[in-house]
Length: 549
Image (cartoon, rainbow, N blue to C red):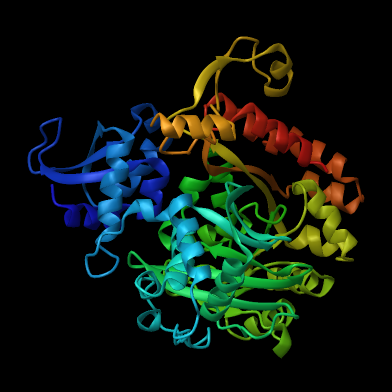
């Protein structure tokens, strides 16, 4: 079994991040099939939990089927699959040098940071040769190995960045306290403690990260913004960096920007076929506006990117206005919002109209000017996709009315509103089955005693004990969850909804009218995920408490 060929199969059919997330790895291509079809080739795919195939099997067969291969699934221990993925990952790193996964655990990072804090920064080169963000080409992006093989201080900073990417972390918080620095990582929407380091080490770590981001290291009394761009395993790593002066020093937050375009697929995002088919019908309209609504961090941008990726057939002129540009999509003109140069969403949108567009993506509708301009653009024969901060699909209508968008513009332009949330996905390795309780039956709409899946979450003490006894779940590290899954509510703007808008009905009345026409609400979508063993009752409860806040 050649690791290099496994890496080639991963890149050809899936992505390394997706394989890690789902504990799946393609092993080899064999002549013949299990059914004896002559001349047919089969891709052998190992999965960590064969029962999980009901959730991801259809997607795998669809991706592999495009290359003309059949699929054969075998089961392997999850730790064996993860080991193979680590070996395959190293094929794209630094000249074949294999990195030890132990370098990224809490103890190793703490020691590295202590070592860096005790040393002198004299003689450490902070020149990383970053170019202006608008002129950096793929060839000019530095490999993270520059730091991994550098000084102890650079190595510690790089290890934190690599760990964040490998563990699918969304944000890194480096926070000065009275006598130390605290590092926390946001994973699956939850901010978790990571390590604590001496103040001296924390100050130096912040300085290295600011230098990597092209920020002014000497300026500590004003907030700054920057960007770190590196390569890892042949893929681009991008971090948006923000510093904020606080009582005990500079707080630094790094947002990990997901830039793997291979994961932009509506089939992987939307599990409900009815919602998926209705959404596809909307995005293939020749004109009109589609709004994706939800709070910050609910996955709105990923949904929009997936939609325009599907529309990117080479026959359309697709333009986007974004802040920031998260994914680089070939064949699409992407424009960065620069408010200091008066390049706002509204001004860029007006320029787009002179560029003969077919599809326009407006990253965010946050003001009346952008809202009206988007609606008017949709009326003039363009398909417009945008996001809006609203709790559900019906409240998006009242949000537009609050922006003083005339109701006649809404009824004549709006095709539909997709409201969404993200809930945590149960770990497929350590989740357990248990019956629904009487209290949960009313929430889930399931009969008492119906078997469902639940997380086997461990306390900090239980995690330490399980780690010492070498029985800690390798997939979720005792949290009970791994990854997140989307929850969706799609309201098509039918004649009934248009009438409700013209009559200035409340959002509750618009919601009821949409439900009577068969709309699946956020809560009902999440209940289906609980029934299918994808998420937990606790996540359903959290979603229900926030959907109408």
